[in-house]
Image (cartoon, rainbow, N blue to C red; front, top):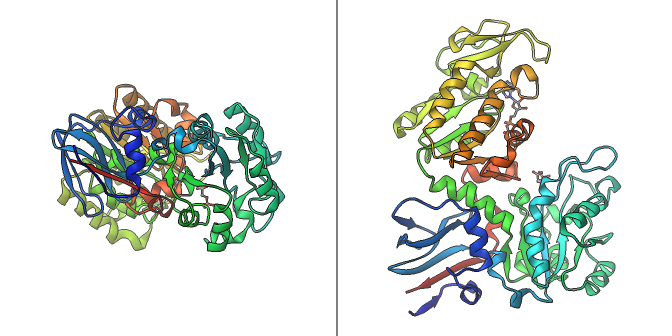
Length: 482
Ligand SMILES: Nc1ncnc2c1ncn2[C@@H]1O[C@H](COP(=O)(O)OP(=O)(O)OP(=O)(O)O)[C@@H](O)[C@H]1O
Ligand SMILES: O=C(O)[C@H](O)COP(=O)(O)O
């Protein structure tokens, strides 16, 4: 077999074995849905190939679906390079700049109220520690304007240390002599947490000089900050120009695997559930999913724009008057594409937007003046459940109603419970960030879903089919072996 190196990634891929039992392959295998089709067509970056599907894993970049595999026609591998492609030979003693998204919520006492993002960052950091790297960990917290004590990363240190099982050191800055000396004394397997990178306005400006200073601390770069991958900032994008290799962390890879991979090559039937407040904030997502899904279930505040576009009365429900034509065109598009688009047939209406409002269930055609729809009704839940029962892949973004108020939470909770039930039966269930994640957590079924995104804005942009700057900047891993 002759090997053709198609990018600088080749030597690393070759050393770890593109299809062998590398940590990368193992990590991906545990995360990935195995495509069911016999042959897979990949069209990445002007390169296309058809593989036999005897032995492969599937992973993706934000721009392309990639396939890594060995078939009778050889090996083709196209993806963003992953931290798992780096072995201890690549990592031992190396200073690795890891950009994570540890932007966690803190209460007034500076106590972390949800550590999901810290836990999600652990696999990459542990992998680096175990392979003898010196980890220089960077993140933002909040949206500070300059140095702001309440946005210091100090409250994160104890939880990070606990989860990693080592004492994490913290710097009081993210660049400069003090940081450099702390990096110099960092042992192999040690972790140094840099102070909030957004204390410098240069971060969000993606200032090249600032990026260069960050990069000068390390030998190579790992981006695991999926939640911030839609931002072209110095620590997410700028540094890649100065650090090679620049690779994806396990979390970033997993998010891409699900939000692009499983959505682009779903086990079918594939259903998308889209809710939330306004159709205007979900146009891109709906349009993109209409290209891929078999069933589209709509809920949340946006349905009233669709109702009104169909000539129904919506009382004082949320309506975007300037999106009526758009709603009509989305319905037509679904029909033209053969997508089964289901709008709720009944709704829970209230006489005011308040937890103690009077409420009742009415058919979609029966919303009276003075009443507003705040949840989908029981008939709709039944119809949605029946539709979901036929599926093999489901992605959900946006609540079905005002789930923050108990009276209007039934629709959202029903979807969360249905997805949990399906997940346990082997259906791939993906929760695409934002309030749907909060709903799944509230119902207590987060643990059974196939994937819960750690990104709000980033997951929306990915579902809209946008290229994320923090991903596209990473090294390609393209190998062709014939
Ligand atoms: N019928 C409704 N009327 C008014 N608001 C609604 C209705 N249904 C849901 N909402 C509200 O929509 C909000 C969520 O909408 P949003 O578009 O932010 O969805 P999301 O999933 O959180 O998206 P993102 O990922 O962008 O955060 C919730 O606060 C919920 O109360
Ligand atoms: O919480 C988030 O969505 C990410 O951490 C990105 O934060 P930002 O919206 O402040 O860039």
